[in-house]
Amino acid sequence: MSSNDPTLKDDASNNNNHDQTPTYKTYLCDPTSLYYDDYFCYSDDRTNLCLSRLKDITTLPVKIFNGLENIITLDLGEIGLTKLESGIFDGLSKLTQLFLNHNRLVTLPSGIFKELHSLKELYLNDNEFTSLESDIFSSLTNLTTLNISANKLLALPNTIFKDSRLLQELDLSKNGLTSLESDIFSGLSCLLRLYISENKLSSLPKTIFNGIKSLEWLYLRSNKLKTLETDIFSGLSCLSKLDISANKLLSLPKAIFNGMESLEWLYLESNKLKSLETDIFSGLPKLMYVNLFDNKLILPNPIFNRTKNLQSLILSSNKIESLTADFLNGMTHVTSLHLANNRLSFLPKTIFHRLVNLDRLALNLNKLKSLDAEIFTGLSRLKYLFINNNELSTLPDTIFHDTKSLELLSLDSNKLKILTPDIFNGLPCLRILHINNNELVSLPKTIFKELKFLTSLSLHSNKLFSLEADTFIGLSELKSLSISNNELSTLPKDIFRYNSTAAIKTTTTTTTTNRAPGPERIEIA
Image (tube, rainbow, N blue to C red):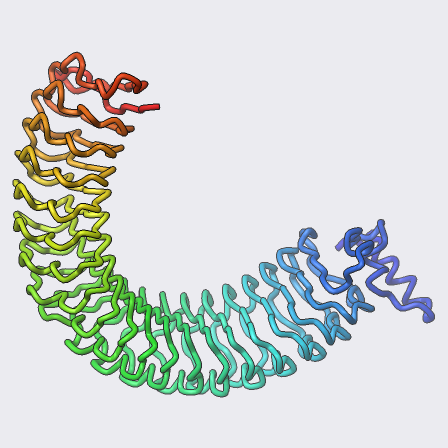
């Protein structure tokens, strides 16, 4: 701060005059002051003060809040603070919210919060703290929310939270924590949400969560955990959300989730799991969401048969080569199923038959060579179906007859050589259809006749030699049509005649040698 700062002169003059003590008016209500805030000074509200409009203020005068005994909320976030004067918050006994986030604070003076007995929320996140004193929060006995994420903390004193017994939310994420003491959370019986993600934890003490039985959310994402003790979550009967994703877990103990009858959301993606015990999820009656994306799972046996309330299951990007017909039995509430990017070459024809509520199904990026005509039987609520990037050369004529709610169908990047005239019949809701990057030589002229609401059709990168004049007849809602990169030499004159009132705008692209230019996009106003 400059030596010419008028507030410093005010401080000096006031210090020489023992009859006057600087107050908030000295700094906030003097138009010549660096901290002048006309809104606050002329407002009837003296309970909320936000100084976030200030920038590059490395420190604040120790008496700047003097006289604001009734202030409730104080926002000092994002102003550039590098240090705080000892005693700066003295007298603010009614303060309930304090924001010190997104500054450059490295340390906190001892006892800086000693008079903030009413404080409930403290935000210290996004600073540069490397350590905190063990008693720094000892006076904050009413604290319910504490955020010290995104700092440079390598360790925490074992007793740092011992006096904050009313804490409900604690965020320790995005630091450099390499270990935590076994009883660091002991006594936090009111804690509901705990975030420890994005640290460097390679292990956790077996009893670390024993004292926080009310916990509802626990985030351990993006650490370096390789193993977890069998009883690590024992007693967390209220936990509804658990995130252990992006660690280095090779396996999970069979009974690791025992007693977690309230668990609804489970994130296990981006680990190195190779297998899971058959009954590992059997004691989770409320489980709705499981994400196992990006592991090394094979899963030869059914492990979800007892998860009756499961709604979303993500198994994409694993090493699953086959699934048994009963693998998904009992999952009647599932709406979203992701099996993409595995090694599936075959699917039992009845594997999806009981998934009557399925809304989204991803089978793309596998090695499927064929599909049974009844594979999608009973999926009357299915809206999004991805079968692209497989090795399909043909499709049964009636394969989509039960998927009457289908809105998006992706068949691109297969080896399809022919499609039957009626294959898309009975799909009145279909809006997006991708058949590009296949080996189609021709199309039946009535193949799209029932797709009245189709808005996007991709046929590019096939081997189409010709198209019938009526190929696209009736597609009055079509906005985008891609037929580039085919073998088309001519197009029928009226091929894009949708109806008498449609305004058609075409954009063409130059094709490769010996190929005539063709419309790539048709926009209908």
